[in-house]
Image 1 (cartoon, rainbow, N blue to C red):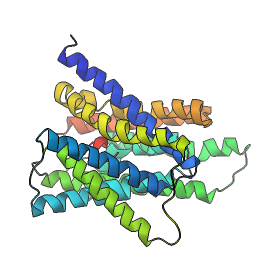
Image 2 (spheres, helix red, strand yellow):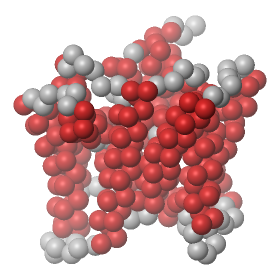
Image 3 (cartoon, one colour):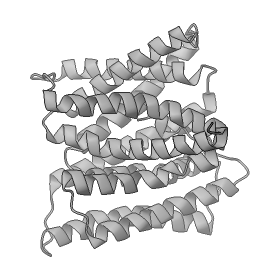
Image 4 (cartoon, rainbow, N blue to C red):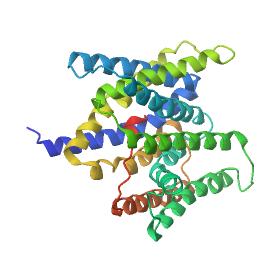
Length: 316
């Protein structure tokens, strides 16, 4: 029988592969013509309902008080609407590998917010080098990679930069949510909490879609049904449960390794499945970025006043 530690590592591998693949799967569904907001709406709504039913069956639910509602609503707004939904729109214009790499800058963005707004973190040489490498790697890919693909001609693709802008907005929203709400955490069962966040987030997206001109909802074609099911069941339910188990058995320091694996998984899958071009600049820029994130995480762990972070599970 598999021991507890081994199960924890199995869950770590599982979430690394699944959360890495969801970027590519999301990109595929967007390419097939389904509106990005509808993808986020359907995925979050059904995942939230299924998780909520599981919580009631397993008696993990609780009565939501006003303070709970405010907390859950704020997370839903920042993480599931301004982060997840906006990131989905960004995927229309940039490769999924680049989107995953931008999301990996989360620890760096978190420290910058802490330093600027709360003065709760002291920048040291290691942190500064990590920040420069993290953003430098993204810049390296965004400029040189596309310069190479355009056959050494500098062409400004405004849609491409708009996609990067949306991805950065999503990243900032996620980071702000993490910094502010981790300081005012509530005591709710994690699965019950995430189910309510998903439902609130989907309702916000649905209301926003109804306010937009034109037809925002369309019938999901048969060939996109399985990818959507994968995003819902694996990406939003099973991976989160696996993350909780890995966190409980292995601790955050080991479980957080998934953040380095995700962009690599996304890049490989997108290259093989979606035909996204992987140049030498993509590889070099990715290594530079992940090295920067590693250095920032190392400096973060060395600080006495640890910064509590919401995990990717709270935003995916």
